[in-house]
Image 1 (cartoon, rainbow, N blue to C red):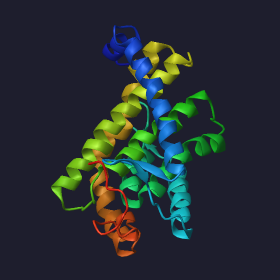
Image 2: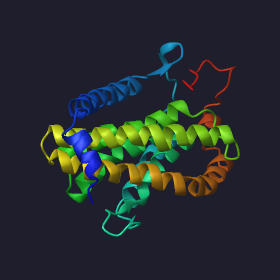
Image 3: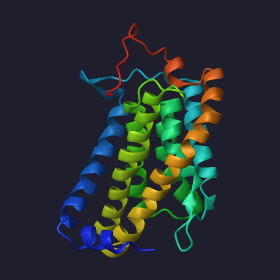
Image 4: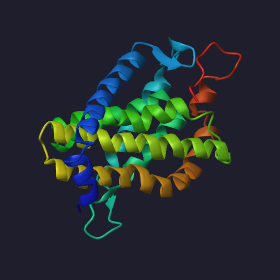
Length: 245
C-alpha cells in the first residue's frame, strides 16, 4: 500500500528537506534524552533536575518484563485492511507500559527494539531509527501524562494526546526520514508506505484498543502496588520533580 499524496508531499515536495532535518534532529534529541535519564537527570518545569528514580530489584524486573512482553507479542499481527501491512498488537503497549510503570516501562519498551531485531535477525540501520524513535511513544507519555486515573476524562485525554497522537506522529516522521536519508528505501516508499503504516499501528489501532488494555492492566497494576507514582510516593511533599504537563 502506498499513499501517493504523502509520497509526493513528503518524498519529493517542498517539505522533503524539512522532514528529513526534523527526523535527524529528533533522533539526536532522543539520544540526549536517554543519556540524561541514565545519568539521573530529567526535564521539568524548573529545568534540569534529578529524576530520583528508585532503581531496585522491582524496577529492574519491570524493565525486563516490559521488554520481554513487547518482544514476545511482536510477531502477533492482524490485517485490518486487505493489502495493508499487518498491524502489530505490541505497539499499543508502548505508551501504556510507560504511564503504568514510569521510566522502567519506557526503557523496557524502547530498548527492546534493537534487542528484538537482533533476536529475529532483522538488526539493520533501520533499527537505529526504530529504537530512538520509540522514545517519543514511551518517554513523552511518561513525562507528560499527569497522575493517571482510568475513569478520569482528563487523564484519558492526556494519554490520547501524547501517547496516541503526538508521539506516533513524531514516530511516523522519524523512521521514514531515516530510511529516506540513508537511502534504505526510496522516498516515495518511505513516506507513502512506511509512514502511514507506523501511524496506523501506533496511533489508530492504539486509539481503539488502548482503553480496553488499560481497563484490564491498570486495576491489576494498582492493586499490586506497581503503579510507578504509588511506588515512588509521588506528591507535593516529596522533593521529586513534577511532570511537565
